[in-house]
Amino acid sequence: MMSTATTTGYSRRGFLGMLGAGAATLAIGTSLTACGPSASGGNAAASAAVKLPTYKEFTGIKPDLPGNADGLQPGFLSMPKSFIKTTSKAPLTQDLSAYTETFATPPPGMDSNPFWQRLNTALGAKLNLTIGTDPGYPDKFATMLASGDIPDLMWLPPNQGIPNVGPMLEAKFTDMTKYLSGDAVLQYPNLAALKPDSWKTAVVNGKIWGAPIPSTPMGQVMIGNPEMWSKVGGFKFTSTDDFMAKGAEVAKAFPGSFVLGSDYVNEMHMFGEWFGVPTTWRLNKDRTLTHMYETPEYKAMLEFAAKVFKAGFFNPDTTLSSFNAPFVANKLAAYVSVGPKGISEPREADPTRHGEVLIPFGHDGKAAPVYDMGYGTVGFTPLKKTTDEKRIREILDFYNWMAAPFGSAEYLQKNFGTEGKDFTFDSHGNPVFTKDGNTNAPGLVSALQIMSSPENPIYSASFTQDTQAIYDASKELLKYASRNPTAGTYSDTNSKVGAKLTTSARDTATDILTGRAGVDTWDAAVAKWKNGGGDKIREEYQKALA
Image (cartoon, rainbow, N blue to C red):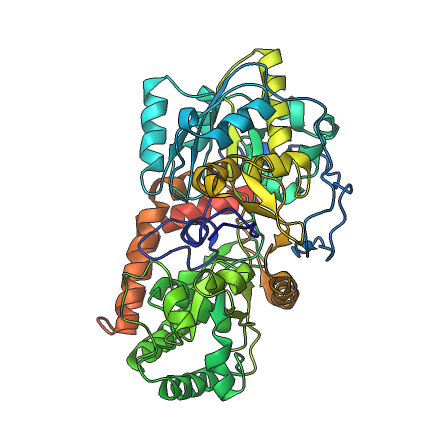
């Protein structure tokens, strides 16, 4: 089956690992953390004072469904009828090397990949990519840095524990502030169309180090199976008691099925929203921070999670890499996805099936729930240290080309290639990969999108009803939106030990959920987190937010 355009170019696993907010960035079989190497690192005052690039919205293509400043992404029910060219020339005059990552199967190499070769023609020179995969990206990143032989560009992920980001940038990469700060960015219109919140990611030590890679601002959601939940009046609940009662009825109506997936940490993230657990950190009135692990809401969530496990709601198979097959077979009633776009995921297994987003509810029917927004970016891509003005300007032209918005001619080339060779248009005007395109493009497109990207709209080529459903669900979720107050700030201690501390705490939380430990063990786990670096992380974030 040929691939069509989708709302994003990242895999579910990659997105869950990269973008999950609050309690759960854990995807099945992975343990990436959410806090980024960004903003305010080393010099909070300087970073707070830096003038972000002037925002100038791209208005050349009008969406069918408008977005807003609160995080609602615009929606397109179809591709534009014509593709506007947003740049006047190919950006490169000499070859460019880069290190990036793919969350898809790596593509065929450049010499045997016509899609890649045609992209090079559009760019004006060869784009020589070293494409890493997860896990292993940070190790290779460190090896390259230590060797001194680094590529022109290196994607800096927001979540993979790369330490000492501030000193590393100062020593190895180029300060781009004077080219991007304030109105200077207007020379590069596609970069100016990136929102201020996206740019905060690329600010470290009071300097702007490259173009950010925007992603969906929405966080994880629970996706329900409409066919199964229709037996109990739909996928909505008034309290956790209501959830337990209806879940038991669904399991009884579909023998051999499970109410929830096996991704325990992600499920606890959803439970936490029902209990009002803060989005990683709670910013208090006195500007101090309280971590979610320290709150009574988190402990109450753990007690509930253990109750859910005891009731047999979880699928016991923790090796599943996808929940689509059991979902469309009516063997799974709900699971956690990266965000509202998860509505479309079941169609990968059965085009006639779709999911439904659960809108958070108060655990007791009275308390207000929260909805954890996502991080909003997947890092940035700095340029290795150089004083060559011409080269810097060429890299900026490259950034600008790569950030061309949805529906532009450059976007079409970057994501789908050349008509008749890499893709064709279907009867609705949506690009569909050819057989060769389906072989050569996806892994490379994933790597390109991770390295540089425009703001992302909601778009589903084959199922316009999904675009509308994702858009409508997003509007409802935003009513309960909660953002991590430390997003866009930097803690070096978190970069060094945050992942280890989080893994340890999650292990205890999972032991409590599965009944291997009692909830009374949680206090000791919190103390271990605090003493192992949590208090230091808090101190650094508080300094950045002061």
